[in-house]
Amino acid sequence: MSRKAIIYLLYICIPLVVVYVTYSQLNHYFFDAMDPEQTQSVLIDATPPKTFKEIALDLESKGIIRSNLAFRILAQGQGKDTMIKGGEYELSPSMTPPQILDKMVRGDMFNRRVTVKEGMNLSEIASAIEQAGIISKVAFEATSRDEQLLRDEGIDATSFEGYLYPETYQFPRNTSPVKIIKAMREQLTKRWLPEWTQRAQILDMTLHQVLTLASIIEKESGNFEEQPVISSVFHNRLKKGMRLQADPTVIYGIPNFNGNITKKDLTTPSPYNTYVINGLPPGPIASPGINAIRSTLYPTDTNFLYFVGNGDGRHIFSETLDQHVNAVNQYQKNRSPVVDPAPGEDAIDPAAAELNDDPLAGVEPLPEGTAQDALGSNP
Image 1: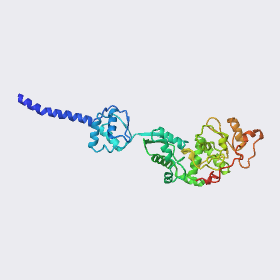
Image 2: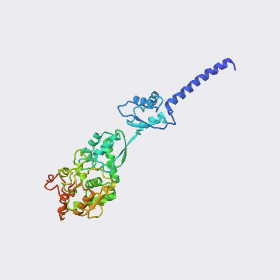
Image 3: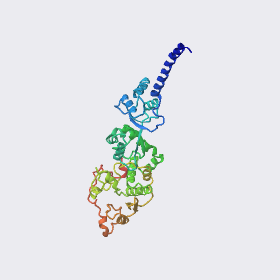
Image 4: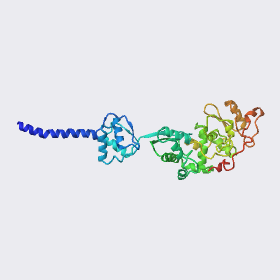
């Protein structure tokens, strides 16, 4: 081959090689994954007011992409730089730039998990949501008492207390509190069986009343086997016109409860003090689980009117005040039972007078229209 031919060949080949290398490098920067073998995810914050440039720089600094400039050019060339959904994204170096871009345009965000446990009240649910990093406790609590939202959801109450179903949920960061509340409310609707509506009507109870009593049962015991029996105690007391005298309702009505319930607490009038008011309190005191709801609607057939904890998480049930006082003496010697005798029931033996002393004697009930005078008077 002549010298002239060689020069001519180089003149043709060198540009082709340059084009090929350039194309390979550009393709490498624009379309290849940073590390196809590295699948460990990194959480990227793309929430406003972050700009697309700041997001790209963050992706580069965390080793998700090779070049923030190439990523921005790719996005701008496709008109997607303004289509990114603000939020958190779980991304890895094994993803290609187009895959990353498409995920952010779709809004396929990282979901944070929050578990609403049976027996949690609104304040506790709000704290769990804040701890999960979804939204602030203040924002959630304010929305949970929004009058318009309550009307929209058909709830005649002052808050969503008791209507947020206990379950594990997943929400992206900064999900609106309205969306969270509606999701939890919808879960309750899904779990409510059609036959329960008819059963509630037979018991002459509204949904609100069912959830109210179920929440009290839930707070009294998390033992699924005992809940129908506890339900029977409350149903029996309501039928006899006896006050529920449930400690959890008293605690719910005490602002900043310090963990110790006193005799003064039991005698201080409040809409939730069932040692003072008749019937049910104005509304639920927590989120009841499905078993507590079922137990409310289908209580065990008993004559029990009293129960006391036996120290191992279960309860001793009694039909008479005498039996109850004996149980208290046996299992809770340091606590005097604050109970009313059933209608027609004899006073207990004078020897147990200190245990039968009713501290509610002489305490005036709440003004008419504040306390619930009977089961049927609840909203």
